[in-house]
Image (cartoon, rainbow, N blue to C red; front, side, top):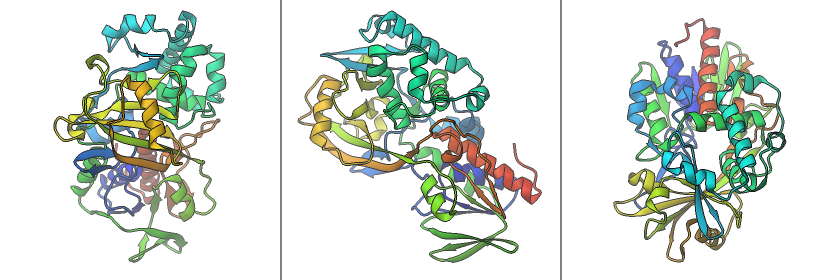
Length: 421
């Protein structure tokens, strides 16, 4: 079998198939595994390709890595809450179960009325306690209308809920599937996201090393696939290095590459994100807020969130230096001075002496999942061709991993092999 793409979906697929003893070749256009889940070196700073978190509550993550792999991932958790800038002050809203010291400040913060706060808590807890299959397969609507119906309105909505979800969904218009948003909120309630100590690339790196240890496997980087052609007795791939033949091929790329390789494939529109990475000369947040996501409750600019990465994982920067990641929606150019002016408000200090490390612009960061949610799409396109990726499930690491494993199951069934657990 051949897998096109060594992102999370492709690696998850390859691992499951190779676990049965079948031969697997993974073709990757980039210089290594990971897809978007990569970390680059920028003058000694560890810079992910956009602000990314890993949530240990994702069931597929533990299923793919196992307990030993989760331990090797060594997630460094963010704080279970957010610091919201309103006027000249920053207010902490947090999960009292995991950050009890912030319970009183969360209640007293001038971010919506008690009724609005109670409505949001009820909506979030409802998402956390609902059967995820029922959420995934049930009635759907745009997120904005779902929040309206739940009574999540006012200052809490505009200053906290909307910017937080905008950073996660890549959407500040509330058009995203409410079912998908509820699944996202469920994962945040059930788990505390974090980052590996040396960047998110550790996740696909662990998967690739596990794959390399299995007999009959090969991951071939810097190999772009130009065309996928069905033929008698199998599938043929045209690459820069010649043709490759296989009984089955899984296209596990991003949605738009998959659409190019598989004409007629229905894919969602892309959503872009841009992250500005700055070095701050001093830690910009008080110790109690250092590991929290910071939001602009006054919405004074394009930044939807900002975080001190080195407060969570010091290995993101050389010893004693401070790396701040700030994200805006879209991949269009945003002037850095605009971002820095807003960050002065977010962090409550001047940013004139902050140095830009780099900018991560990802035009195809996320597929736009509009209602109705179409999760668990059939990977089998017929004639030995299969497709996987977060665009075939949910726009998340959970969706990518699950889709890859689902495609592997379909391939193994077609080849008459016993699927691995």
